[in-house]
Picture (spheres, rainbow, N blue to C red):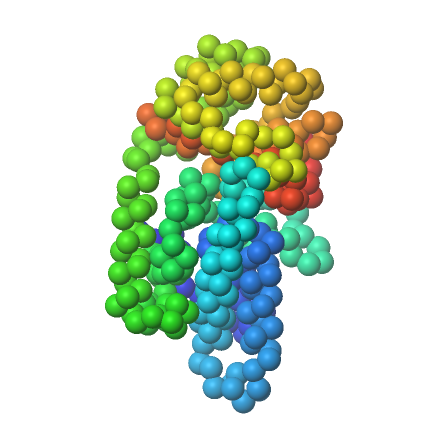
Length: 308
């Protein structure tokens, strides 16, 4: 299983930032925390004596190892913070600037611009990563996603390469257990999302029920800053009724189809303001999972872009 390759040395460590952001986001699921982790890794690099830096054969590998170690610490403390989080916690949804036809950024790079959107960054996959222990997640992401050798991962985790190999194997079993085969291609996925959008806009409960798996689950993340169901809503019929109730409470709610973390999703906005970003997982053409992020702090990257 592989969705990327390890970073190679480039002229100047600044060129590693894109790779580090991709590693950190997959480890943390938070854009802000990823930026902080990468900045801390660079701070540690520049704190090294010049002679010590010159001795390091691969600055990129060194920075990745340090970033992994920082993320490991963040994941440990994040568990306690997320236990106090109001309602369910979901990873930050990522926009796809290229899809919107926007030109290159000016000034400082937008974190969203730096993300490589592939299977390892879909909401479905990130949610599985959340079920892992911090050590499993670091070992799995660095090895299976970015192809780093266990000898380097061992330095980040402070464990033996053999122990890191076992951690990655345990994480791999979690992925296999959680991810059912998806029998729908990209075009089919986009069509299913489009039909959900149309049924939601028309407040057609029957059509929504037909599009949702009977055992579907909807999870919303408001973080106490936006109205959202505090617990997952289970069952296609209940989800359909909830979606229509939302539409009834927000006249003028506009739904637009957009890529969310690299796959078809929906963005809901009201009065030009992005209120919700929804991701979907499907099986046999029906929606099995909906992840709706409503926490405005997690929607900041979306507010920077014109969704027209």
